[in-house]
Length: 355
Image (cartoon, rainbow, N blue to C red; front, side):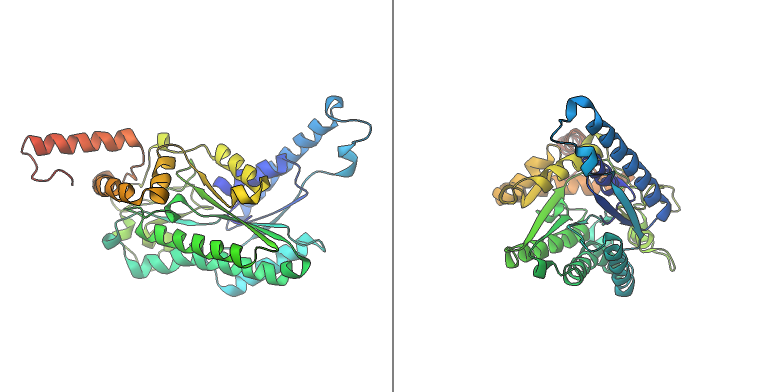
């Protein structure tokens, strides 16, 4: 599981341990956080084992605890934004830890977020690291695992790709991020069809989830500094190392209303359900609260209506971002902003109905 030191990846690892998975290999940039998640996984596995040892859950013919021990948890610290040599070394280490049986399921969860208007973003600073973490590295990693572990020769393999609902429809204020997730979804959709006889690919598209994804300076996109990290330069944050918000000189912080977000535990639970469900139903899973589900349904099945609503919501979100750094996703907030625009237009305080 990549990006498993926090957020969705960490919660997914813990839930898989709770389900009695035999061996988890966790990867991420921060070794200390990986160790913490690994400890939580071991605790969850011990609780599962204790539950299975209870008399009410076992029968004389089904001694689960004798056949399966606690979940083994290994860690492979590495940075998805590093070069191909680091990635190849991480794959070799993971396969060594996996042993002769190899890797059964590869979960590509690590990612990097970006939130700023397209023309306000320093493309030279933001685009290369964003496309590397969100698209290039996951595709390289998956190919390296499949080839080195000889998935095609053994006749089976399973990849879970955590993309985003923004890979289904363009999202104003997230132009680069949306483009990177479209690329990721497009690649793995095509791969799944090309190798369908032996490879299962599950595309998971979460919406807003209650993780540290928004912990970053929203003005950083316009104030790139020499020597800053890629996240600081581009105004982005990564999924596995974002506990402390990054402030620019004004002290402002990118944020989103928590009421718009799904609980990370619920998101991970639904990902596990999609992993074990029949592939013909779960080849692509949309995970979000409403109105996020309505948004993706419109983008997929009613593109004209989606375009009309995007032309209304987009300017409102951009105006709120410029005003106070809010990544506005909560519908009541957007409706209040729209009502304020209507009042300003009706009273003559503004010549335009929308910002």
